[in-house]
Amino acid sequence: MRSDSGNHAQSRENVEPEESIRPIPLAAAVITLAMVLFGVIYLLLYEPLDNSQWGDQRTLADLAGSKPVAHGQDTGMAPRVDGKALFTAHCATCHQATGQGLPDVFPPLDGSPWVRGEARVLANILLHGIRGEIHVKGKQFQGEMPNFQQLSDAELAGIASYIRGSWSNKAAAVQADLFAQERKAARGSTPLAGEAALEALKDTVSGSGQGDATSVKPVPAQAAPMPPKVSGKTLFATHCVACHQATGQGLPGVFPPLDGSPWVRGEPFVLANILLHGIRGEISVKGGSFQGEMPSFQHLSDAELAGIASYIRGSWSNKAAAVQADLFAQARQASRRDTPFAGEAELRALRKP
Ligand code: HEC
Ligand code: HEC
Image (cartoon, rainbow, N blue to C red; front, side, top):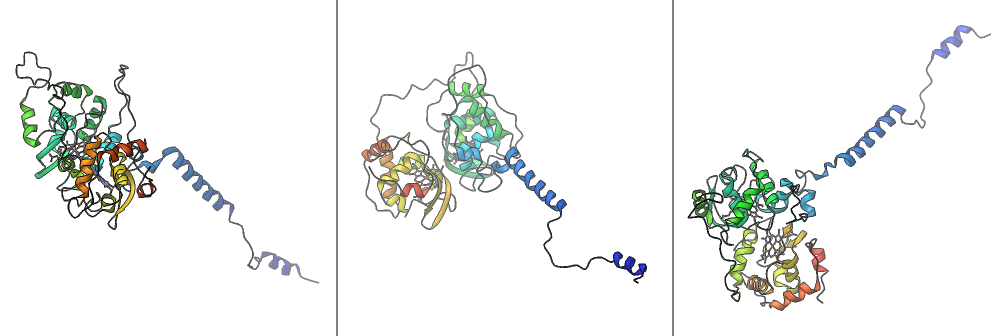
């Protein structure tokens, strides 16, 4: 007979551990599943991927390009403008998303007295551009800033308000009618000649001065149509130097060189397409890879574009033949695209008609 005490002792023993397949404990499975679900839902709901602090500082708005905004039609309702998105689309290539600019090339907006100071002066900078010497935070700049007349008053006010209130700037927002007013005080279509012209602005009486004898007379809309005499070099200095530099060397990692570039010296049809449509995406030039944005220059005439293209093909160490205006007429015909090329793969695929 077995003794009961022996049975009790046995049943108190734990089972000998053995190797076998054990499922994940239910609790662990549930927690894991919950975390994955949370992640998916978070991504879907909050779209945190538009954070420009990550990656190359371009936001989704930047990548999508500027949205066409209805001009003219005055619905009485102020169009909704997003100053930050507009800034990213129009200004950040040069002044950078951080507002710090690039040393010696593009002046900072953060902490700049031109931005924080009198709003009228800022409005004129945006409406007319500026070319010549200007000092910002103790540093001298001698570059060129394009004008942004093509943007609406509301859009410009959005941008101006954004830069006046961003980074360390704490200046008050500005209203769209400031831009309407300054447009009326039209002072021609040339960029302001540096800081001297800006200082002079501060002294002129603002607004639609009643009895203001010295108020600026509107410049007659572009005098007699003169046949445009185009100098490729001058046009290059006006439209391209800010980025590609007068030496044609560009800026390392930011703007590719034109000197020695196969895109410049090579097939003229491809070069024409670059100038007409711009590029946004990866392109390699002389062993360096660039991932920036080159604006389109469709608004220049065929003769002007041919002048620029001929100039860059024959300057610095480049010795390629000049090109004719009809190349651009042809390239315009061949493609009616209105988006920039998405990098060099698309350029390589270009076929001459
Ligand atoms: C192609 C490059 C480029 C773009 C795009 C550009 N700027 Fe500029 N900006 C410049 C340069 C270069 C100067 C200095 C001009 C000079 O030296 O005379 C300048 C000067 C300025 C100044 C006066 C100096 C300062 O730092 O305060 C302001 C303000 C300014 N830009 C605002 C803007 C805003 C706002 C936009 C977008 C709507 C913009 N810029 C787009 C190149 C650019
Ligand atoms: C706002 C800055 C900017 C301006 C202004 C600009 N470019 Fe560019 N350009 C770029 C950037 C950035 C790229 C590279 C684009 C990329 O990474 O997809 C580029 C690429 C090019 C290329 C192909 C790459 C190479 O180096 O050969 C050519 C050619 C070129 N630009 C010519 C011009 C000419 C000519 C003008 C004046 C009509 C001009 N660009 C004005 C920024 C600019």
